[in-house]
Length: 173
Image (tube, rainbow, N blue to C red):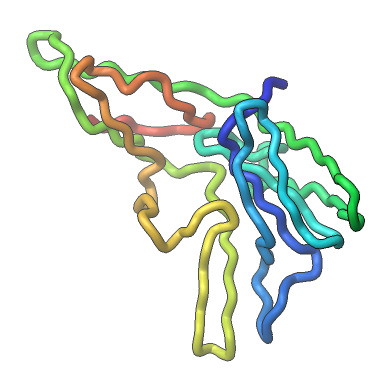
């Protein structure tokens, strides 16, 4: 396939992580792919898993969570892993008024994202409960449940093509 710029890449530890109550997925590091679809991370030697995500695309393999690619990092060595994100659909909305003139508008795509960010949870003695996403912080600025995407059509009336993975949605302007 073609290289994908801006894909989110997470490196998780296979050891489960530190603490009295380890996270379900210990995210060691994360980054985004560059214009050539490549990424680089500097980590300590050890066993890890690599997963990738890009908004509007299905997870690799088409499942409800991203595939984990095991990788072993040796001291002073470079380890490589390839992730193949499947193709996706595009949505382009053109908004006009009753005279068929283009207008600016907020466009909401209502539906359930089939590839939601996997949750990373931790409970410490029932006193502290943490929930974050592997690729994003689910606690900050997340979309409400059922709202898959929000876009804005400019004065030209168009959102431009935006990636939207296969599924059933309702577009509300």
